Image 1 (cartoon, one colour):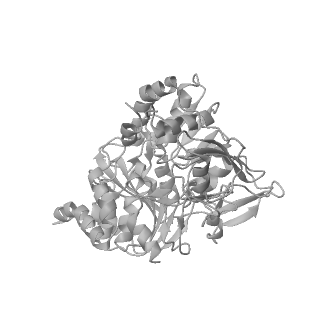
Image 2 (image 1 turned 90 degrees about the vertical axis):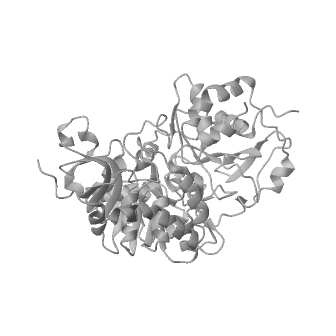
Image 3 (image 1 turned 135 degrees about the vertical axis):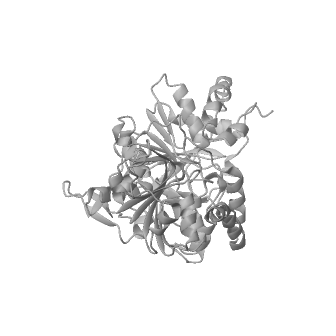
Length: 244
Length: 276
Protein backbone atom coordinates (compact mmCIF):
# COMPACT_ATOMS: atom_id res chain seq x y z
CA UNK A 1 0.00 0.00 0.00
CA UNK A 2 1.55 3.29 -1.09
CA UNK A 3 1.61 6.43 1.07
CA UNK A 4 -1.40 8.29 -0.28
CA UNK A 5 -1.29 10.91 2.45
CA UNK A 6 1.27 12.23 4.92
CA UNK A 7 1.20 11.57 8.67
CA UNK A 8 0.55 15.26 9.22
CA UNK A 9 -2.45 15.18 6.86
CA UNK A 10 -3.81 12.25 8.88
CA UNK A 11 -3.34 14.09 12.19
CA UNK A 12 -5.02 17.23 10.81
CA UNK A 13 -7.98 15.09 9.78
CA UNK A 14 -8.17 13.37 13.19
CA UNK A 15 -8.12 16.70 15.06
CA UNK A 16 -10.66 18.27 12.68
CA UNK A 17 -13.15 15.45 13.45
CA UNK A 18 -12.85 16.32 17.16
CA UNK A 19 -13.57 20.00 16.44
CA UNK A 20 -16.84 19.54 14.53
CA UNK A 21 -19.57 21.83 15.82
CA UNK A 22 -17.27 24.18 17.75
CA UNK A 23 -18.20 27.85 17.43
CA UNK A 24 -14.82 29.38 18.28
CA UNK A 25 -11.51 27.52 18.15
CA UNK A 26 -8.16 29.04 19.11
CA UNK A 27 -4.68 27.65 18.55
CA UNK A 28 -1.62 28.72 20.53
CA UNK A 29 2.00 29.18 19.53
CA UNK A 30 3.84 26.43 17.63
CA UNK A 31 0.63 24.60 16.73
CA UNK A 32 0.55 24.14 12.94
CA UNK A 33 -1.40 20.85 12.92
CA UNK A 34 -4.13 22.11 15.29
CA UNK A 35 -4.17 25.35 13.28
CA UNK A 36 -4.69 23.54 9.99
CA UNK A 37 -7.36 21.33 11.62
CA UNK A 38 -9.19 24.39 12.92
CA UNK A 39 -9.08 26.03 9.48
CA UNK A 40 -10.43 22.83 7.88
CA UNK A 41 -13.26 22.76 10.45
CA UNK A 42 -14.08 26.37 9.61
CA UNK A 43 -14.05 25.69 5.88
CA UNK A 44 -16.73 23.01 6.43
CA UNK A 45 -18.89 24.96 8.86
CA UNK A 46 -20.91 27.20 6.53
CA UNK A 47 -19.63 30.21 8.43
CA UNK A 48 -20.57 28.91 11.90
CA UNK A 49 -17.00 28.39 13.13
CA UNK A 50 -14.57 31.18 14.00
CA UNK A 51 -10.85 30.46 14.26
CA UNK A 52 -8.11 32.38 16.04
CA UNK A 53 -4.58 31.37 15.10
CA UNK A 54 -2.13 33.09 17.45
CA UNK A 55 0.72 34.57 15.44
CA UNK A 56 -1.50 35.04 12.39
CA UNK A 57 -2.40 38.48 11.03
CA UNK A 58 -5.34 37.24 8.92
CA UNK A 59 -6.86 34.67 11.25
CA UNK A 60 -6.87 36.70 14.44
CA UNK A 61 -9.72 39.11 15.09
CA UNK A 62 -8.54 40.26 18.53
CA UNK A 63 -8.11 44.00 19.03
CA UNK A 64 -7.57 44.16 22.78
CA UNK A 65 -4.03 42.83 23.07
CA UNK A 66 -2.59 39.64 24.46
CA UNK A 67 -5.11 39.49 27.29
CA UNK A 68 -8.12 39.11 24.98
CA UNK A 69 -7.65 35.36 24.39
CA UNK A 70 -7.82 34.78 28.15
CA UNK A 71 -10.68 37.18 28.74
CA UNK A 72 -12.72 35.63 25.94
CA UNK A 73 -12.01 32.15 27.35
CA UNK A 74 -12.94 33.22 30.88
CA UNK A 75 -16.25 34.52 29.59
CA UNK A 76 -17.02 31.19 27.94
CA UNK A 77 -16.68 32.49 24.37
CA UNK A 78 -13.95 29.99 23.43
CA UNK A 79 -15.04 26.41 22.79
CA UNK A 80 -11.81 24.59 21.98
CA UNK A 81 -8.09 25.01 22.58
CA UNK A 82 -4.96 22.84 22.37
CA UNK A 83 -2.34 22.09 24.98
CA UNK A 84 0.73 19.87 24.93
CA UNK A 85 3.52 19.17 27.36
CA UNK A 86 7.03 17.91 27.80
CA UNK A 87 5.36 15.34 30.03
CA UNK A 88 1.73 14.20 30.17
CA UNK A 89 0.54 11.62 32.71
CA UNK A 90 -2.41 9.24 32.96
CA UNK A 91 -4.35 11.74 35.09
CA UNK A 92 -3.99 14.29 32.24
CA UNK A 93 -1.66 16.46 34.29
CA UNK A 94 0.69 18.38 32.00
CA UNK A 95 4.24 19.63 32.59
CA UNK A 96 5.63 22.46 30.48
CA UNK A 97 8.31 23.51 32.98
CA UNK A 98 11.07 20.90 33.26
CA UNK A 99 12.32 17.49 34.32
CA UNK A 100 15.23 15.90 36.18
CA UNK A 101 16.93 17.39 39.21
CA UNK A 102 14.94 19.67 41.52
CA UNK A 103 12.72 22.55 40.44
CA UNK A 104 13.64 25.33 39.70
CA UNK A 105 17.12 24.02 38.88
CA UNK A 106 15.94 21.17 36.65
CA UNK A 107 18.43 19.30 34.45
CA UNK A 108 16.09 19.96 31.53
CA UNK A 109 14.17 23.23 31.55
CA UNK A 110 11.28 23.79 29.14
CA UNK A 111 9.93 27.27 28.28
CA UNK A 112 7.21 27.49 30.94
CA UNK A 113 3.50 27.00 31.54
CA UNK A 114 2.19 29.76 29.21
CA UNK A 115 -1.63 29.96 29.47
CA UNK A 116 -2.13 26.31 30.42
CA UNK A 117 -2.81 26.81 34.14
CA UNK A 118 -5.84 28.91 33.20
CA UNK A 119 -7.14 27.71 29.83
CA UNK A 120 -7.19 24.06 31.02
CA UNK A 121 -9.85 25.13 33.55
CA UNK A 122 -12.09 27.36 31.47
CA UNK A 123 -12.12 26.02 27.88
CA UNK A 124 -14.78 23.29 27.55
CA UNK A 125 -12.92 21.18 24.98
CA UNK A 126 -9.17 21.06 25.49
CA UNK A 127 -7.44 18.68 23.09
CA UNK A 128 -4.06 17.44 24.26
CA UNK A 129 -1.83 17.24 21.21
CA UNK A 130 1.67 15.80 21.25
CA UNK A 131 3.18 14.13 18.18
CA UNK A 132 5.99 12.33 20.03
CA UNK A 133 4.51 9.20 21.60
CA UNK A 134 7.19 7.79 23.92
CA UNK A 135 7.60 6.85 27.56
CA UNK A 136 9.61 9.99 28.18
CA UNK A 137 6.53 12.07 27.28
CA UNK A 138 3.73 9.80 28.57
CA UNK A 139 4.91 9.22 32.13
CA UNK A 140 3.23 7.65 35.20
CA UNK A 141 3.38 11.01 37.04
CA UNK A 142 4.61 14.39 35.77
CA UNK A 143 7.57 16.00 37.58
CA UNK A 144 5.84 19.41 37.70
CA UNK A 145 2.12 20.14 37.37
CA UNK A 146 1.80 23.16 35.09
CA UNK A 147 -1.91 22.45 34.97
CA UNK A 148 -3.85 19.59 36.60
CA UNK A 149 -6.04 17.23 34.55
CA UNK A 150 -8.86 17.26 37.10
CA UNK A 151 -9.83 19.38 40.10
CA UNK A 152 -11.36 18.78 43.50
CA UNK A 153 -15.13 19.22 43.83
CA UNK A 154 -15.98 22.89 44.32
CA UNK A 155 -13.21 24.24 42.10
CA UNK A 156 -14.63 26.35 39.28
CA UNK A 157 -13.88 24.21 36.26
CA UNK A 158 -16.20 24.37 33.24
CA UNK A 159 -13.34 23.11 31.06
CA UNK A 160 -10.70 20.45 30.84
CA UNK A 161 -9.10 17.72 28.73
CA UNK A 162 -11.40 15.78 26.40
CA UNK A 163 -9.03 14.05 23.95
CA UNK A 164 -5.37 13.20 23.39
CA UNK A 165 -3.95 12.93 19.86
CA UNK A 166 -0.45 11.56 19.20
CA UNK A 167 1.54 10.17 16.28
CA UNK A 168 0.28 6.70 17.19
CA UNK A 169 -3.27 7.01 18.44
CA UNK A 170 -6.37 8.88 19.60
CA UNK A 171 -7.53 8.69 23.24
CA UNK A 172 -10.55 10.10 25.09
CA UNK A 173 -10.26 11.33 28.70
CA UNK A 174 -12.93 10.73 31.34
CA UNK A 175 -12.60 13.23 34.23
CA UNK A 176 -14.89 11.17 36.48
CA UNK A 177 -12.73 8.07 36.26
CA UNK A 178 -9.56 10.15 35.75
CA UNK A 179 -8.40 7.82 32.98
CA UNK A 180 -7.67 7.81 29.29
CA UNK A 181 -9.34 5.32 26.95
CA UNK A 182 -7.71 4.29 23.68
CA UNK A 183 -10.20 5.13 20.92
CA UNK A 184 -8.28 4.19 17.78
CA UNK A 185 -4.78 3.43 16.55
CA UNK A 186 -3.51 5.22 13.46
CA UNK A 187 -2.99 3.20 10.24
CA UNK A 188 0.36 1.39 10.21
CA UNK A 189 0.58 1.17 14.02
CA UNK A 190 -0.53 -1.40 16.60
CA UNK A 191 -2.02 -1.52 20.08
CA UNK A 192 1.19 -3.23 21.26
CA UNK A 193 3.21 -0.27 19.99
CA UNK A 194 0.94 2.11 21.92
CA UNK A 195 1.27 -0.01 25.10
CA UNK A 196 5.06 -0.23 24.74
CA UNK A 197 5.40 3.54 24.39
CA UNK A 198 2.95 4.72 27.07
CA UNK A 199 4.14 4.99 30.66
CA UNK A 200 0.66 5.05 32.23
CA UNK A 201 -2.30 2.65 32.31
CA UNK A 202 -5.30 3.32 30.11
CA UNK A 203 -8.51 1.54 29.17
CA UNK A 204 -9.18 0.00 25.78
CA UNK A 205 -11.96 -1.95 24.10
CA UNK A 206 -11.41 -5.62 23.22
CA UNK A 207 -11.09 -4.65 19.57
CA UNK A 208 -9.38 -1.31 18.98
CA UNK A 209 -10.42 0.26 15.67
CA UNK A 210 -8.01 1.74 13.13
CA UNK A 211 -8.20 5.55 12.85
CA UNK A 212 -10.05 6.35 9.60
CA UNK A 213 -7.75 7.74 6.91
CA UNK A 214 -8.56 11.08 5.26
CA UNK A 215 -10.84 10.67 2.25
CA UNK A 216 -10.09 12.09 -1.20
CA UNK A 217 -12.28 15.15 -0.71
CA UNK A 218 -10.58 16.03 2.61
CA UNK A 219 -7.14 15.66 1.04
CA UNK A 220 -8.18 17.92 -1.85
CA UNK A 221 -9.38 20.57 0.64
CA UNK A 222 -6.19 20.32 2.69
CA UNK A 223 -3.90 20.61 -0.31
CA UNK A 224 -6.06 23.22 -2.04
CA UNK A 225 -7.44 25.86 0.31
CA UNK A 226 -6.01 25.00 3.76
CA UNK A 227 -2.36 24.79 2.77
CA UNK A 228 -1.99 28.46 1.70
CA UNK A 229 -4.03 29.59 4.73
CA UNK A 230 -1.77 27.88 7.26
CA UNK A 231 1.33 28.94 5.29
CA UNK A 232 0.67 32.54 6.36
CA UNK A 233 1.66 31.60 9.93
CA UNK A 234 3.68 28.41 9.39
CA UNK A 235 5.47 28.64 6.01
CA UNK A 236 7.97 25.85 6.68
CA UNK A 237 5.27 23.51 7.90
CA UNK A 238 3.17 24.19 4.79
CA UNK A 239 6.11 23.29 2.54
CA UNK A 240 6.57 19.81 3.98
CA UNK A 241 3.34 18.72 5.68
CA UNK A 242 1.23 18.11 2.60
CA UNK A 243 1.65 15.63 -0.24
CA UNK A 244 1.98 17.26 -3.68
CA UNK B 1 5.23 73.30 18.95
CA UNK B 2 8.51 72.34 20.60
CA UNK B 3 9.82 68.85 21.09
CA UNK B 4 8.85 67.14 24.33
CA UNK B 5 11.78 66.83 26.78
CA UNK B 6 10.98 63.11 26.97
CA UNK B 7 12.42 62.66 23.46
CA UNK B 8 16.07 61.67 23.88
CA UNK B 9 18.93 59.58 22.59
CA UNK B 10 19.10 55.81 22.97
CA UNK B 11 21.89 56.07 25.54
CA UNK B 12 20.01 58.70 27.54
CA UNK B 13 17.01 56.34 27.51
CA UNK B 14 19.15 53.45 28.79
CA UNK B 15 20.58 55.72 31.50
CA UNK B 16 17.07 56.13 32.97
CA UNK B 17 17.18 52.51 34.17
CA UNK B 18 19.07 52.00 37.45
CA UNK B 19 20.47 48.68 38.63
CA UNK B 20 17.81 46.57 40.32
CA UNK B 21 14.91 48.05 38.34
CA UNK B 22 11.77 46.02 37.65
CA UNK B 23 11.14 46.12 33.89
CA UNK B 24 8.14 44.80 31.96
CA UNK B 25 8.88 43.67 28.38
CA UNK B 26 6.39 42.44 25.76
CA UNK B 27 6.23 39.21 23.85
CA UNK B 28 8.08 38.87 20.54
CA UNK B 29 5.19 39.70 18.19
CA UNK B 30 4.41 42.92 20.01
CA UNK B 31 7.50 45.13 19.54
CA UNK B 32 10.80 44.35 21.27
CA UNK B 33 13.07 47.29 22.19
CA UNK B 34 16.19 45.40 21.18
CA UNK B 35 18.37 48.43 20.41
CA UNK B 36 17.61 49.81 23.89
CA UNK B 37 18.26 46.39 25.41
CA UNK B 38 21.71 46.34 23.80
CA UNK B 39 22.33 49.85 25.13
CA UNK B 40 21.44 48.57 28.62
CA UNK B 41 23.83 45.65 28.24
CA UNK B 42 26.57 47.98 26.99
CA UNK B 43 26.27 50.20 30.02
CA UNK B 44 26.42 47.13 32.29
CA UNK B 45 23.06 47.27 34.08
CA UNK B 46 22.77 44.67 36.88
CA UNK B 47 20.17 42.85 39.02
CA UNK B 48 17.16 43.56 36.82
CA UNK B 49 13.80 42.02 37.70
CA UNK B 50 12.39 41.22 34.26
CA UNK B 51 8.65 40.67 33.85
CA UNK B 52 7.72 39.22 30.47
CA UNK B 53 4.22 40.10 29.26
CA UNK B 54 3.56 37.30 29.17
CA UNK B 55 6.39 35.37 27.43
CA UNK B 56 9.80 36.34 26.11
CA UNK B 57 12.67 35.09 23.99
CA UNK B 58 15.94 36.47 22.65
CA UNK B 59 15.67 39.73 24.61
CA UNK B 60 15.60 38.01 28.01
CA UNK B 61 18.17 35.44 26.92
CA UNK B 62 20.61 38.21 25.96
CA UNK B 63 20.10 40.09 29.23
CA UNK B 64 20.49 36.89 31.26
CA UNK B 65 23.56 35.79 29.31
CA UNK B 66 25.16 39.20 29.83
CA UNK B 67 24.64 38.92 33.59
CA UNK B 68 22.06 41.74 33.84
CA UNK B 69 19.19 39.76 35.42
CA UNK B 70 18.54 38.64 39.00
CA UNK B 71 14.85 37.67 38.71
CA UNK B 72 12.89 36.40 35.70
CA UNK B 73 9.13 36.56 36.18
CA UNK B 74 7.53 34.82 33.19
CA UNK B 75 4.97 32.49 31.67
CA UNK B 76 7.50 31.25 29.13
CA UNK B 77 11.02 31.86 27.82
CA UNK B 78 11.74 30.36 24.41
CA UNK B 79 13.26 31.14 21.03
CA UNK B 80 10.06 29.75 19.49
CA UNK B 81 10.67 27.66 16.40
CA UNK B 82 14.43 28.10 16.92
CA UNK B 83 14.32 26.11 20.15
CA UNK B 84 14.86 26.67 23.86
CA UNK B 85 16.43 29.83 25.31
CA UNK B 86 19.98 28.58 26.00
CA UNK B 87 21.23 31.23 28.47
CA UNK B 88 17.97 31.19 30.46
CA UNK B 89 18.06 27.40 30.70
CA UNK B 90 21.73 27.35 31.72
CA UNK B 91 21.31 30.12 34.32
CA UNK B 92 18.48 28.15 35.92
CA UNK B 93 20.46 24.91 35.95
CA UNK B 94 23.31 26.72 37.70
CA UNK B 95 20.99 28.61 40.05
CA UNK B 96 22.31 31.96 38.83
CA UNK B 97 18.90 33.61 38.53
CA UNK B 98 15.63 33.34 40.41
CA UNK B 99 12.59 32.36 38.34
CA UNK B 100 9.02 33.29 39.19
CA UNK B 101 7.02 30.88 37.03
CA UNK B 102 3.60 32.28 36.15
CA UNK B 103 0.84 31.70 33.63
CA UNK B 104 0.04 34.23 30.88
CA UNK B 105 -3.29 35.58 32.19
CA UNK B 106 -1.85 35.94 35.71
CA UNK B 107 0.72 38.42 34.43
CA UNK B 108 -1.90 40.32 32.42
CA UNK B 109 -4.28 40.40 35.41
CA UNK B 110 -1.60 41.54 37.88
CA UNK B 111 -0.67 44.41 35.53
CA UNK B 112 -4.35 45.32 35.19
CA UNK B 113 -4.57 45.52 38.99
CA UNK B 114 -1.66 47.94 38.92
CA UNK B 115 -3.28 50.14 36.27
CA UNK B 116 -6.38 50.38 38.48
CA UNK B 117 -4.32 51.12 41.59
CA UNK B 118 -5.80 48.16 43.50
CA UNK B 119 -3.67 45.74 45.55
CA UNK B 120 -4.52 42.49 43.78
CA UNK B 121 -6.39 40.82 40.97
CA UNK B 122 -8.28 37.54 41.09
CA UNK B 123 -8.08 34.85 38.43
CA UNK B 124 -9.73 31.50 37.73
CA UNK B 125 -7.67 28.37 37.22
CA UNK B 126 -4.19 27.79 38.76
CA UNK B 127 -5.63 25.84 41.76
CA UNK B 128 -3.93 22.47 42.14
CA UNK B 129 -0.93 23.42 39.99
CA UNK B 130 2.69 23.39 41.14
CA UNK B 131 2.88 27.01 39.98
CA UNK B 132 0.76 27.93 43.00
CA UNK B 133 2.96 25.85 45.35
CA UNK B 134 6.04 27.75 44.16
CA UNK B 135 4.52 31.24 44.35
CA UNK B 136 4.27 32.11 48.06
CA UNK B 137 3.41 35.63 46.91
CA UNK B 138 0.12 34.32 45.43
CA UNK B 139 -2.80 33.56 47.75
CA UNK B 140 -5.98 31.49 47.64
CA UNK B 141 -8.97 33.40 49.01
CA UNK B 142 -12.70 32.82 49.42
CA UNK B 143 -15.03 34.50 46.99
CA UNK B 144 -16.81 36.94 49.35
CA UNK B 145 -19.98 36.68 47.26
CA UNK B 146 -20.25 32.89 47.01
CA UNK B 147 -19.52 30.56 49.89
CA UNK B 148 -17.02 27.77 49.23
CA UNK B 149 -15.71 29.27 45.99
CA UNK B 150 -11.90 29.43 46.17
CA UNK B 151 -10.08 31.80 43.84
CA UNK B 152 -6.44 32.81 43.37
CA UNK B 153 -5.40 36.36 44.32
CA UNK B 154 -2.38 37.85 42.54
CA UNK B 155 -0.59 40.90 43.91
CA UNK B 156 -0.47 43.83 41.48
CA UNK B 157 2.71 43.97 39.41
CA UNK B 158 4.03 47.54 39.46
CA UNK B 159 7.12 47.67 37.19
CA UNK B 160 9.45 50.64 37.41
CA UNK B 161 9.48 50.69 33.62
CA UNK B 162 7.66 49.23 30.65
CA UNK B 163 10.23 48.88 27.86
CA UNK B 164 9.02 48.29 24.29
CA UNK B 165 9.36 49.25 20.64
CA UNK B 166 6.56 50.94 18.67
CA UNK B 167 6.05 52.17 15.10
CA UNK B 168 6.07 55.91 15.85
CA UNK B 169 5.96 58.73 18.36
CA UNK B 170 4.99 62.39 17.83
CA UNK B 171 6.82 65.52 18.93
CA UNK B 172 4.62 65.75 22.05
CA UNK B 173 5.94 62.38 23.18
CA UNK B 174 2.75 60.41 22.46
CA UNK B 175 3.41 56.87 21.24
CA UNK B 176 1.31 55.11 18.58
CA UNK B 177 0.92 51.37 19.22
CA UNK B 178 -2.02 50.56 16.94
CA UNK B 179 -3.81 47.43 18.13
CA UNK B 180 -0.94 46.28 20.37
CA UNK B 181 -3.02 46.95 23.44
CA UNK B 182 -0.77 44.98 25.83
CA UNK B 183 1.67 47.87 25.47
CA UNK B 184 -1.06 50.23 26.67
CA UNK B 185 -1.63 48.06 29.75
CA UNK B 186 2.12 47.84 30.37
CA UNK B 187 2.43 51.63 30.14
CA UNK B 188 -0.52 52.20 32.49
CA UNK B 189 0.72 49.64 35.00
CA UNK B 190 4.33 50.86 35.15
CA UNK B 191 5.74 53.96 36.81
CA UNK B 192 6.94 55.02 33.36
CA UNK B 193 7.06 53.64 29.83
CA UNK B 194 10.37 53.95 28.03
CA UNK B 195 9.92 53.43 24.35
CA UNK B 196 11.92 53.20 21.15
CA UNK B 197 10.18 53.96 17.84
CA UNK B 198 10.86 53.36 14.18
CA UNK B 199 10.22 57.03 13.48
CA UNK B 200 9.49 60.37 15.15
CA UNK B 201 6.75 62.38 13.46
CA UNK B 202 5.72 66.02 13.66
CA UNK B 203 2.35 66.99 15.11
CA UNK B 204 0.17 65.38 17.76
CA UNK B 205 -1.49 61.97 17.22
CA UNK B 206 -4.26 62.85 19.68
CA UNK B 207 -5.59 65.40 17.16
CA UNK B 208 -6.29 62.60 14.68
CA UNK B 209 -9.37 60.51 15.57
CA UNK B 210 -7.99 57.55 13.60
CA UNK B 211 -4.67 57.53 15.44
CA UNK B 212 -5.82 58.60 18.92
CA UNK B 213 -7.41 55.28 20.05
CA UNK B 214 -4.12 53.47 19.37
CA UNK B 215 -1.98 56.08 21.08
CA UNK B 216 -0.36 56.01 24.53
CA UNK B 217 -0.67 59.58 25.86
CA UNK B 218 2.64 61.15 26.90
CA UNK B 219 1.55 61.29 30.57
CA UNK B 220 2.56 57.62 30.84
CA UNK B 221 5.80 57.99 28.88
CA UNK B 222 9.12 58.70 30.60
CA UNK B 223 11.34 58.59 27.54
CA UNK B 224 11.23 58.08 23.78
CA UNK B 225 14.18 57.43 21.48
CA UNK B 226 14.17 56.93 17.74
CA UNK B 227 15.74 53.59 16.77
CA UNK B 228 15.21 52.54 13.18
CA UNK B 229 15.00 48.74 12.93
CA UNK B 230 15.04 48.96 16.73
CA UNK B 231 13.48 45.52 17.23
CA UNK B 232 15.93 43.64 14.96
CA UNK B 233 16.87 40.83 14.86
CA UNK B 234 13.32 40.22 16.18
CA UNK B 235 10.47 41.03 13.79
CA UNK B 236 8.55 44.32 13.96
CA UNK B 237 4.90 43.97 13.01
CA UNK B 238 4.01 45.55 9.69
CA UNK B 239 7.68 46.53 9.10
CA UNK B 240 10.28 43.75 8.93
CA UNK B 241 10.57 40.01 9.53
CA UNK B 242 12.73 38.15 12.04
CA UNK B 243 16.40 37.72 11.07
CA UNK B 244 16.22 34.00 10.40
CA UNK B 245 19.96 33.49 9.85
CA UNK B 246 20.88 35.27 13.09
CA UNK B 247 18.32 33.32 15.11
CA UNK B 248 19.51 29.97 13.76
CA UNK B 249 23.10 30.94 14.53
CA UNK B 250 22.23 32.17 18.01
CA UNK B 251 20.21 29.08 18.98
CA UNK B 252 23.22 26.93 18.12
CA UNK B 253 26.11 29.13 19.32
CA UNK B 254 24.62 30.44 22.59
CA UNK B 255 24.66 26.95 24.10
CA UNK B 256 28.20 27.85 25.24
CA UNK B 257 29.30 31.05 26.95
CA UNK B 258 31.95 31.68 24.31
CA UNK B 259 29.43 31.24 21.52
CA UNK B 260 27.02 33.55 23.31
CA UNK B 261 29.68 36.28 23.60
CA UNK B 262 30.41 35.99 19.90
CA UNK B 263 26.73 36.41 18.98
CA UNK B 264 26.32 39.32 21.42
CA UNK B 265 29.35 41.07 19.87
CA UNK B 266 27.76 40.62 16.45
CA UNK B 267 24.66 42.48 17.65
CA UNK B 268 26.68 45.17 19.43
CA UNK B 269 28.90 46.07 16.45
CA UNK B 270 26.54 48.53 14.72
CA UNK B 271 25.90 50.25 18.07
CA UNK B 272 29.59 50.54 18.86
CA UNK B 273 30.23 52.05 15.45
CA UNK B 274 27.41 54.56 15.96
CA UNK B 275 28.73 55.53 19.40
CA UNK B 276 32.26 56.24 18.14
